[in-house]
Image 1 (cartoon, rainbow, N blue to C red):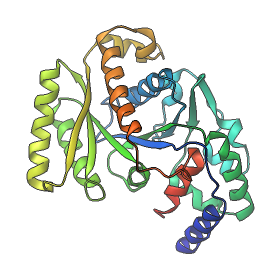
Image 2: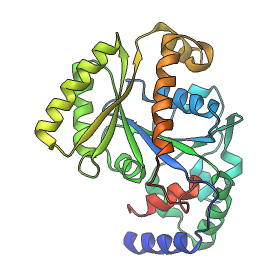
Image 3: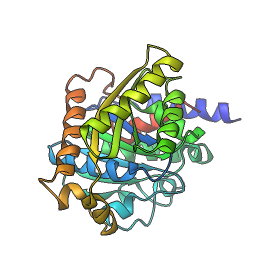
Image 4: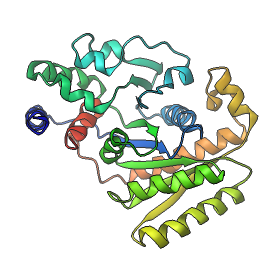
Length: 291
């Protein structure tokens, strides 16, 4: 039954594909365990990318612990599930954060199949075209290696794992990398809450050494950046503010800008994304393939 539904939706999505003016890069940010600052990094990274002139969407896919509304200090009344139920339009749920940054309140991917009425899904795909001009969509996934998390990771162009220099967090990060490596070779790592660049590189090298020994030398695990341990970050979170906005010019602001610059370089040499996979509708085209 589920297979038939997925096939119907995939046919529907294929039939509604149109040429897009932009190509959206889907970047999933995940972690092995909670509490390592994944959503803090996702929200601040999305903001910094938007300030560089890119059109950015950030999709809250952290099922059960969705908290990007807290990060951006906004109120969410309805999410993407309300759209699929026909209780809201896509435009109704979008929350503008800045001129180039839009928050998309999310819901579990497997809920899509429960609302697979053809007319309803056609309307959803048509409405989702309001986001087709996005350059980047950050997907803030849940922590761990659950099935619905894996679905978002498989749908992304790039996967970034966030961890901290704590033995338990490092173990969980390695387990996550090992799982992700079953479907892709390129994985990026962000070291959060480190004392220095030296510590970030040292922990990265440890993880990489174990990963290459156990996963294989095809794995391309890159350290895309680090965020220093700084009270400015935790105080900004408590105040429901972005540290990249509140503490411009600080070392942590420089750290997140460096990560954004690394991502920008990837965008410039992007050859993975086709123009028919833009915005929110593009993400759903990819998700459907994994049902």
